[in-house]
Image (cartoon, rainbow, N blue to C red; front, side, top):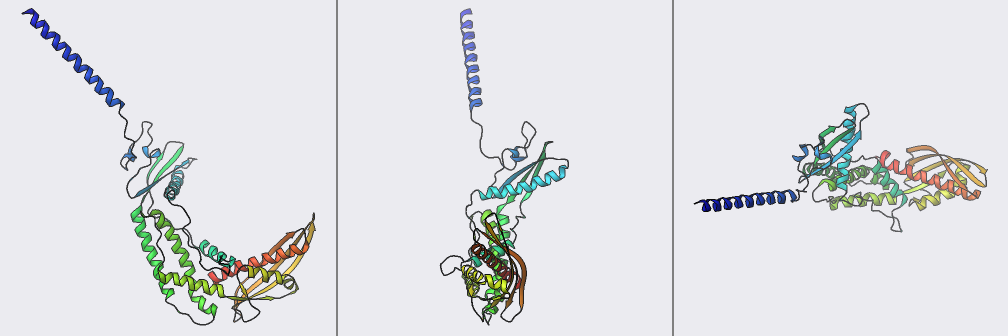
Length: 359
């Protein structure tokens, strides 16, 4: 009877040893398995790391239809101001993250071209001036959802609901398009300037539409900028054609202006303006006092200019006084450069007058 008991005890001991070995092997296998490397969810962003910092500082949340940005700044005294600045930087980072997947400039160019099929300088100046008057569209839907201060730095997490922002931008776009359609329905009569005048507010609206479209292309899920309706494309063409057809007369008021008058007319023509002897839509009255000096082998010519822009009826639209300068090793060339710079100022002032004053 003793031998069977011993044999049974040995079998039991062997079974326990096998079970222990299997348990150890299983634990080792689990320990060696790779951890989940997927981006954290918004809920995971609420957790803190072992160091006590929120996990969103190193792992930005990712959620369908949402965009995020993180901002940080060193704290100097006022923690509230530091958090505010970190929030601003978080919004900037959010927009930068959206731009990573979008390339190119979304702004629409004025399509009218000079006879060489290139955008004239006057057209470019008008486009740039109008665009400079329209501020970028803010993403009001971007909210600061988390903040953190670790003693030395302030941090903020910005969140944007992209579909919600896109819906608001599309509503804004429709409002602008409605205003443009009202202008497109106008059929003003008279000379070129009289036909152009009621249409000029559309320039600012087109620039505003471009700004909205840029933001919409960033936040919308399809990444597309809405195209203009054919009626609005036709309105753009009408405005550009009328601007291109405007004629100007240069009235040289004194001997200084007459001395550089030829250079002014040549430069304005190069800019794409149509210069006429009389019967023009606009008159540029130019006064100039020329002074010069020679210094170290270079000639400097200064043209202190006073210019008034009038319409065909003699009404003053704009007036300004500025100094233009030309520098060259040859005195005649320096004078020509001064004349071209006077013409450049005229083109810039014309753009301002068309956009801001003739309405």
